[in-house]
Amino acid sequence: MNSTSTDTMQMARRLMVALDYADGASARELITKLEGIPCYMKVGMQLFYQAGPEFVRELKAKGYSVFLDLKMHDIPNTVKGGANSIAKLGVDMFNVHAAGGSKMMAAAMQGVEEALAQDPSLARPLVIAVTQLTSTDQATMNGEIGIPGSVEEAVIRYAKLASEAALDGVVASPLEADGIKAACGMDFKTVTPGIRPAGSDIGDQSRTKTPGEAIAGGSDYIVVGRPITGAEDPRAAALRIIEEMSAGRS
Ligand code: C5P
Image (cartoon, rainbow, N blue to C red; front, side):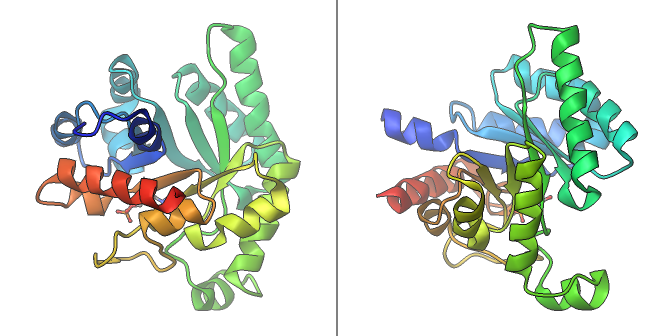
């Protein structure tokens, strides 16, 4: 990094770069450009379904923290098995849908516990629940999905359910981070996609904030994809975002 201050490095660890690529080679190209920036790497379904567990192990071998964003949502027994396999991969964070209910979320935790019992050298990953996707607005949520009320109410309800199931936090829009902290406590983690640096294209996201606003509003981690992956100079874009995050904290 250009700026080597400890503070900047610490803030970089709260930036999760969404590696939304079709194959490992394209993701590696970006990773090379970001070398030396100690950000979290987020592997989602597009990359994982193509490059698989090997790619996750490769990131871990390079020293990155990894968020495996597969958003599991299935019957409890199947999610328990999935969580068990994911924990054995050594990722630092993964997620399930809160809409799967408290039994399903508890089963995910059980799958993790069993993996740790089977291999005590594993570190426990943070298990996070997806609340409402940041691409969902109230009209879609009420009219299509059939959930009444405001998006914020639905998100807080899901967050409380996740907290009661002993999960570590939730994925939510940065607009809801402070409400989640108020409802579930300051230690309950908020991971917020839907981040757009000032003046950038919002794409298909609908509940967005800038990196500085997100940090100021209580986000523990911000997830950024296209504003970095689609930038002409991804390294400069990432460093600018980290600067914006640092400014938001002060
Ligand atoms: O490109 P962009 O910054 O919109 O990418 C956001 C990333 O965060 C994507 O990988 C998307 O799958 C993920 N995500 C999201 N909303 C959620 C959970 C994850 O946008 N609720």
